[in-house]
Length: 139
Image (cartoon, rainbow, N blue to C red; front, side, top):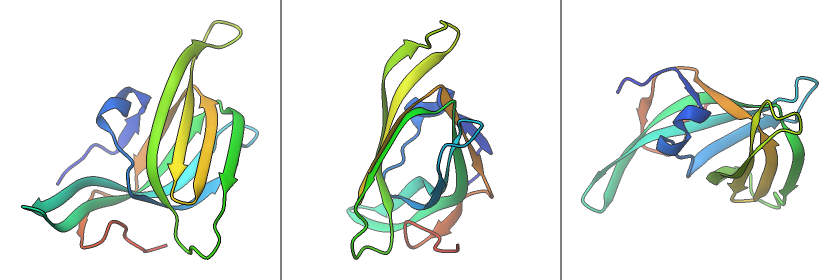
């Protein structure tokens, strides 16, 4: 399976982050960037009702010009963290009228991360590989 190496907000409507493992994230920094280290699932292989495995790539996703950052996570006894969904809504212009902003929400199995951003860049660390599980568990 061959995939392009860089994805952006232009690809949002054809992407999906359900059951992607989140290994870590970096809080918005001086560059107003929020960075996530994930295993991105490109394809779920199945035969009938039985899942055979997944095409997965280690990926870095960076959200740009982040503001209104909020996080609520209750890790409890859970050792792992998975993304249940990533949505965007409420497109609007920045106060100076020069940038299109979106309100993003990353729903986790342990909480939620929400923020406003101009978009994202997701870069693959390698081409997708076949895995029996939804994550590569290699970090």
